Length: 286
Image (cartoon, rainbow, N blue to C red; front, side, top):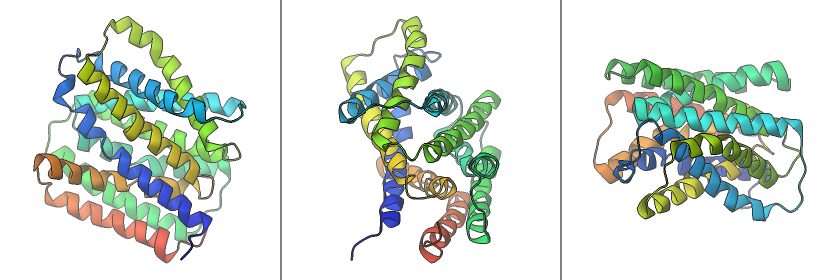
């Protein structure tokens, strides 16, 4: 059975969410223990963008520039810095729950700026998913002593992630490889002076870990999301990426044997129902 272009786009975003869900494995790695804590978000952010840039620049066939690409690149820079800072100051799960509120910000962005049509079939799965994320976030915070600053970083990461999704949808007439190259390049340049100020250079094991982090957790997912958003709406793309907080605990359990509490299953069930409604039951509406 041959998949439609819309179905292929959805699967691209599904694969992107799967690869992105490995973030906690990299950020919390004991191999990074020698990096000063206050420099770690900058070191990780720079090298992740650097390796992503190396991956995609050779693939660009023809260069174009639109002012919106600068805004998109700045969102990528801010999102990377906020995400890593939050994950180090709170927990991987808390950061991901906070970032998962991105579909709500995309909702407002699309409504105010992209003028996209909103119907019950789009809004009901979205708010159902947000209910699931709210359950996950609420019980996670009640059960932990999360840093207030870390929570603010996580909220900011979600807002900026929404900006990335919205800007990619806005610039969908451009080749997705071109968009990714500009975005990670701008992010890398923004990180560069901050990174040089740290005076830190990774060891060989750290360098290899950062290479995998930049390529498989950042570059490939970003490329897949950009490709997917050429055929599906910004809010649907954001909704599908909610697979990430469901898969992240699975990798933790698989590699480290740490089981998740009951509220992860309940909240994840709401998210899964929303995904099924939006992509399977009502999947033909764009």
